[in-house]
Length: 539
Ligand code: CFM
Image 1 (cartoon, protein in one colour):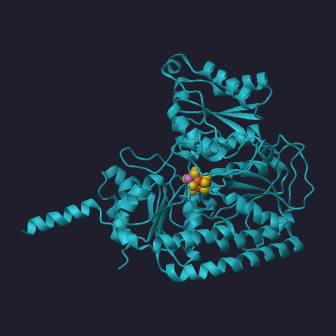
Image 2: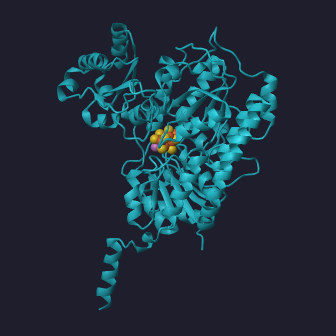
Image 3: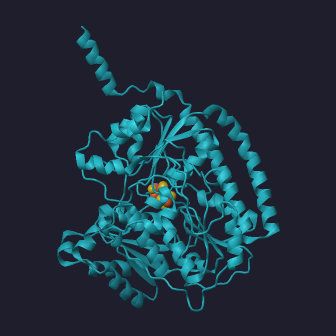
């Protein structure tokens, strides 16, 4: 019998002390679609409570690891102790493909100032300058990005002043990020800080013109497991010029040149919506939310692109690509769907995938029974329409909001007001909008923000889903309970999962996992213990 989600919610939080129980009860909601089109309010993007095990990462992770790191020829230099610098290296599966063997690619390097106690006491700026010079002489990059870890903010090193000095001395672009781990409540703050840096120090610096008819940027696509490669292939077959990607498989120059595009497509709203907004204000480039996760979603997103450019030849080419790819998708989908139909999934990832991957599961007849983000904001759950009513708390105020005005020479609206009105009249063609996770979920489904490990274990015991999707920190704890865990951050060793080809890969991988007999043989030690105790008691 399916349990009433309200009872499950009570059961998850009953162990907590009163204050925490109250807080968690606002962060766990049961979905419903109300008559006025709204969904219930969820508390999100607030501090994790001490004592609970959260899935979240830090602000430095969001800035360096997520947004800037995937770009291959910006030299990333971590100012901090060597432990933080472990994450300066490829801990995320963002792939890149330099044009030649000689082309600059620093993704495999890990550069750190390796702060010691002495630097904490007397300051680390001198050491940072030495490190920037050394990095420059070793690699001759076009740009060096400096990332601050927690101690840097605590001792007050001014990375921005150092960056300015080094920029003048070396004649290359050097910029710093105040992305200390504690700067925000999660990695989400790091995304915002990185977006601000991209906008202030890179975007708009390269004026190379392009004569192609359909020019776009793809924002919030980080080429995990090669997703970005699949999308580049689809877009180029449709005849669309991708000026830049933020930031999977990207270079400094492509991002500097991104203001020459005529449309920004936003894949991951959470991590990059700030750049999309700022580019619209300064350069007049509209942005549109897309989703290339799931075969049907990919087709829908491509068609919207055709509508935006209002070009019949483009639309015809898009239809050809969709038809060709869908034929292949259907072959696998029908087989896998027959084997997976009716099975259940839970998704707890980041600030975007816990929504997008629900489409891939529904493609093969699987149902998402509980989902949540690690660090999404209310708009990622409820849709951007709630933004005007959202309170800005002290933690968010901590992060700079750049005041953007139209560029006196380069602001150029890409569509006339009439065109925008016509497009917005079409279904699902809104600009500057994201509908969020909850409106696309069934009623009476549990949505949980910043899930704790205790809640994870209880949910698994209560619902026994066929698959649980999360990250490496959760994976083996979940699997010891006899439930397969798919990593939706790194894709385990698999992928790509984006676009049509990616969907086929995903269907096959999920089929293998949920239909594998081995899970029914897992008998964890504590269950054996219980069994033993019962047997002893019976004697
Ligand atoms: Fe965006 Fe991402 Fe995600 Fe994200 Fe991330 Fe990631 Fe993620 Mo891991 S940018 S919010 S900070 S889609 S690294 S590629 S998988 S938590 S859901």
